[in-house]
Image (cartoon, rainbow, N blue to C red; front, side, top):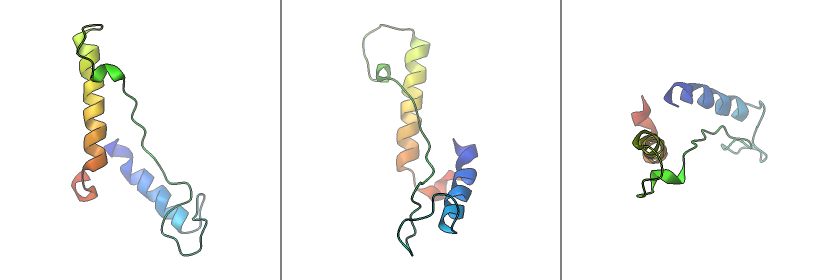
Length: 79
């Protein structure tokens, strides 16, 4: 995810300069089609039942943690 942030930021800047996804309203600083990062996890990251292996549950918990952290961490700390 962190490796692609520069590319996503470049897309948003291009949109603001009149490229694909440019704002609907003149003078807006928000792209009409902004770039996104999509995390895909599972409800098993919250489950306390032993219905799958520890590695599977751990990987789902890890992606949930990363998604929560990335969505609340200030942009300056991304590197």
